[in-house]
Length: 192
Image (cartoon, rainbow, N blue to C red; front, top):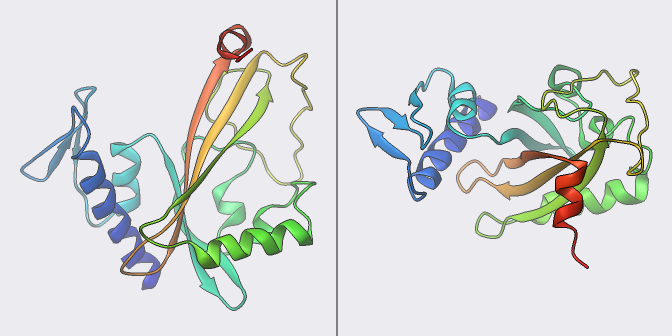
């Protein structure tokens, strides 16, 4: 099916990308990571293989009707959501319960997803404050995360989010690379 083909295309793209980085190599169907880890390329499970090669999480979204729908993904470090709850849902529904994600923002995001080109990915960062440094923070839609502002939370959690279109399948890939910093480390990086 199309989601399977997109997952295989993502795996191929990830392998090409990491081989351009120092410390990665490919030997007899095994990707060697800079940390010494060895990942056998498993074409029967391309998303799990991607998840073992790189730290980023990836969501695959296909255009169905007027919206992009989540058709696959590998998610190790969720920020207060669960992949199985969002699977096969469109962008608007995926963003429940994000309060500021209203109809106006939904239209803008959909236009970005519609217009992104394979050779011109988009990216952004977000900043969230959390009580702890745990990377794996799953929560159901009806399970609210305790509100912590920048004044009381001890850890800054930031995601570098990318949106790119796979050239062959046309599937949109939403990439998420999560970083967590202790408050004092985040404040030391603050500019002026």
